[in-house]
Image 1 (cartoon, rainbow, N blue to C red):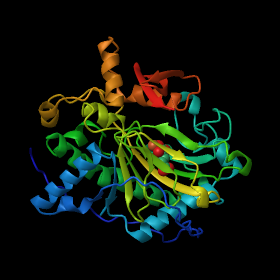
Image 2 (image 1 turned 60 degrees about the vertical axis):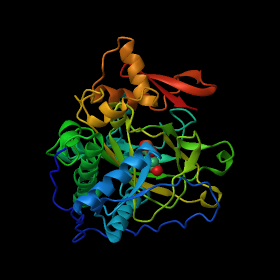
Image 3 (image 1 turned 135 degrees about the vertical axis):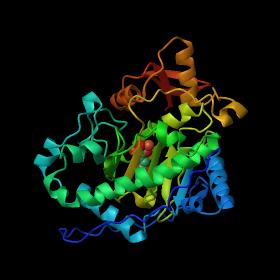
Image 4 (image 1 turned 135 degrees about the horizontal axis):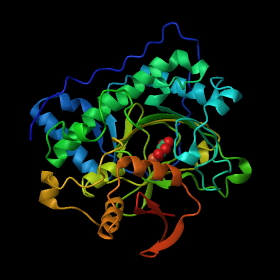
Length: 396
Ligand SMILES: O=C(O)CCC(=O)C(=O)O
Ligand SMILES: [Fe+2]
């Protein structure tokens, strides 16, 4: 294994000078309820800049977290508290302030039917109630093409440099270092995954994107009937990073089959892997299932602002396991894991190995597709969708 140290993780710099004034986001109070929390490991990313022992510790914590719980909390990620506050100020203003006019919402609306999520997502499309009913989620998805094609609504343009700086930091600084740790876990050279997966040379290469979103409170007459705002899913890129925020809704599926709340840790980044890493690692590093439930009882009236960075792969990445990776050689592939298992079954049945681009577009198109087939696996009801020739099951 070659260790090729990166320069120390820099601090994110946001330039607020000369910008129109926007309101400050006020963090909702934390829940006071006694809930069943998922216990998560905390990884200090700055350990990667430390001594060889600290670097090994960093790798070991990450490996334990990603093979046991599947989620982890990242600190030492280079975004200071006041800069995280600024990112939430901007997200809050875009989603709940006067950043987007009604005309902007039409002009910059996403193209859901074609699986292209760039731009404004109206509050429908992902929920449990059906594709065209209110799902309580509004979002703005910033892709690299937003800057290349100037697809940024006029009032947001003065803030575009800060949004870009944040997106860049999440992908090319935090994501880059995570890819080094994952390469080391698999026994590969430091740059292996970074060279293979994300593509280089731009801020948000290919389909990687940064989503600013709000989950609106559920209407009073719908609260009883609503369980999940965002149905359970795995992410389809290689990693997802989201700043921890206080409205308790995000749940992950544990190895024991139990759903538990992801705890709030002020200033930390919640990190999980997606389908790409599960398939490339032959099921060893899992794409952990998660969902956003309605907020817990004492937080039902709060708007929940969430900022997600989805780190995606090159469109032409072959979604197949890296069978030469020393860890895979040592412990073998894990066909019982969900996404990798589906991949194995499909390829054994003669399906073509998908490229990431097909995988992503089909998954975007089929997200929360109500026409999916219902099947029962080990007594548990699932939906079945064909994604890139692969059957993907979701527990319902
Ligand atoms: O908002 C969150 O906490 C998570 C959102 C999520 O899982 C997603 O959009 O894929
Ligand atoms: Fe997700």
